[in-house]
Image (cartoon, rainbow, N blue to C red; front, top):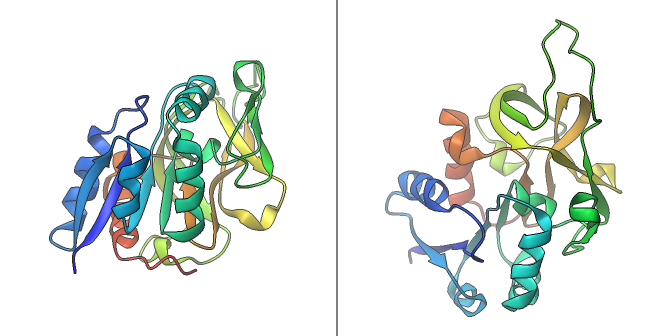
Length: 217
């Protein structure tokens, strides 16, 4: 039976590149559809939670449209991929927008990069937001990392990063101003600060691995 992959559309993120990338790698193994209501997640076998913009407006939209319970349920029961703001929203609280309560699926915070940072060791300015390609170093193995070497480069656009209370959740680390968690994983959840849909061959490999993932680490 063909798998059903839902990409959450809560009204606040640009979904086109995510949907197109998953459709490309899914081939005939899965049907990819946009879930524009919480009720449409019920038919999904796998769920992708992309996001961009500010956490305050994201959480307001989720709470206004009954997404919160549906996302929590999916993150507890189905292969679940969070991307960028879709990662940050899984934490307890973010410093963004004067302090914003998040979904609290994982204990931890979301912090802004150190302001007015010094240049990198090679003299390169370290601007905020962190935008462009950077290395991700895996801390352990995981099915979604099959055929992706540690230290490969992925595409980032962000000013905030997650700090999980439990360091064992961290699956990938990246150095930019600070050393930060750029991917985390627990049970059936994998979430990244980087954008796999914009990360060329390695990003597509990660999405390919997700399409075939059964949610077990």
